[in-house]
Length: 155
Image (cartoon, rainbow, N blue to C red; front, side, top):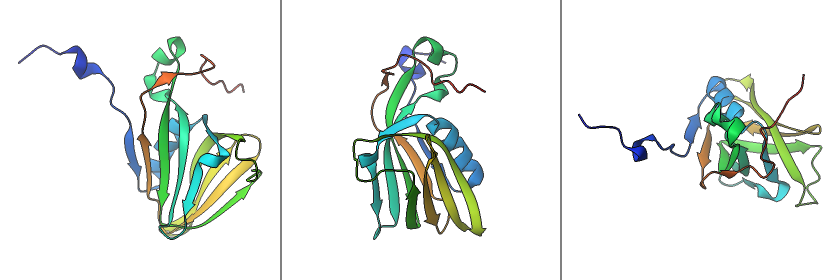
């Protein structure tokens, strides 16, 4: 047996998958308060894939986030997408910054349904999917949150 090394304690980037509504709740909690420019959403109709490049708050840091709040760029992707609809988003302004509040699944006929991405300011994106197939993958190293604060949700 050997002693633990400092390198063994470093956090690895997230790389998670979701195949049902419960899995999607985990991804939703990790993506809460993520921000992205409207231009960082892409739908590959032929490939049936919808993806967003998020600046995700690192909720998984636990108590350390109060001392050193961090964000990381992550790709949130959905497969088996057959249609995309949005409400409350000015798609003509690519510089609009969106804030993701939650990701939920509404079944329409197992395993198909709608994945709803709820945004701050009454915006929403609805993905019609054949089944829940989502991934969340960190693609950069964490960086200090520009606000230097943890997002707050007063009651």
